[in-house]
Length: 187
Length: 430
Image (cartoon, rainbow over all chains, first blue to last red; front, side, top):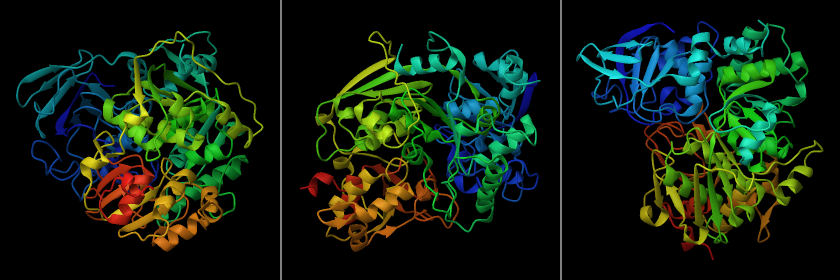
């Protein structure tokens, strides 16, 4: 995990479930084949309904139709981000699109675990609701050691919750390195 | 300690655990399917070596069920990848599509094949793995990475959850099913009301339910964000398990002085037939509040609503009448599919009843519950308004993000299929 994470924000609402993050019809692609895995980047957040894509505008897709990478590096969401299925394809799709962090009020637990254990994206929890304080396209900078998010576009700063128990896994890189350190896997 | 805490303590080799403890547990069964199996195997090979063998062949169960009856090349390729992995390691518990061993929806198949054992710990690469908790065991869903770690080591780290206990007292009225009870709970606590927690179900109305109906309660624990759903085992559980396996098991029960995050008691006579309106399982309304809502489609199927009991309930209402909207019938497993031809309601088989009513009958699989490839049976493609016995109705869940899905019991779905509008089952149940 880098000390600083920066990039353009993509803002969505509450209860963004895994079907909105990556619709089930796209789960057929390989996550390891370099040609196939690109489609996860193309279809990341493509299930978010019209009117809610890239708030407050509502009509800005996360990844443009003719591309495989998103212009947005940090997703800002409301409560219960990642609810629904256990598909690890969801945090994977965000990473494949070029996203490095999500900042949400709260998470569904399997999405949160998958994000951390696979080392795909860093799931930060905001202390206050940011969906109305950040606009899609704003330039954000997260100081991961101080737990602070700065909106460089508006000049506002927000505190993030400490990463807590999972900081050790994020520091190790993924759950396999963590398991090796715990002695459950050969090094 | 609660039943959940005691099962976790036993599998962590500890005398005690408390909510919030991070522990490493030994996994009794790891289950995966055609969507998450291939990427799990890729990660397993990356981390443990191209030729590495799973930690214990007897504890790995692979049940393809999601995208089976499709021409989608990539989906069929994924089943091929599972087949090759099973052959490479000579794995005993694989249920191959296109052969007599094919089962269908993994959560029902685990029960039918005797993998759900009271007191045990089962992890699966599917959020509805919590279904197995109906057998007095700990079960939860994980992603591919966690599954790959288990595949290599048999171990997983878990945070011990607090427990929310829901007690259903009284005798279940004849117009209610388990689906109504769980929609009541999810409507009360919300789709994140159970996040990081165990949802324990208890009370005489729960123990009166057949084992399969109990699975509807635990199945939807995840729709409240729960880590696991659990129902302590009783004689019905033991009878079900012993009829299907001779594997040994040791039931676990919570202590009298267990501590709960929440204790909530319902009188089932006070509960109404319910729906979850679009687009969230906690968007609860009574059927009478939404009665008359125009429908394009009815759907009876999935791990939560495609069990034999669900079809018996629907057939009881549909018998001798014709549906007026497209009505899809999808048995969860091939065993249930066979029962449709032998189980009778007032002399007619379920199959005859559905066929004469004008229903469309599909083959055992997850089918349109989660949308799937474009040629999936029953999948939505436009602005359909659907009433469904499935468990999740977030935007796009059944295929089209412009479709609207109401979740309801098989009674309510069948009554609505006959009228083309949402209909209270009490109007047609005699």
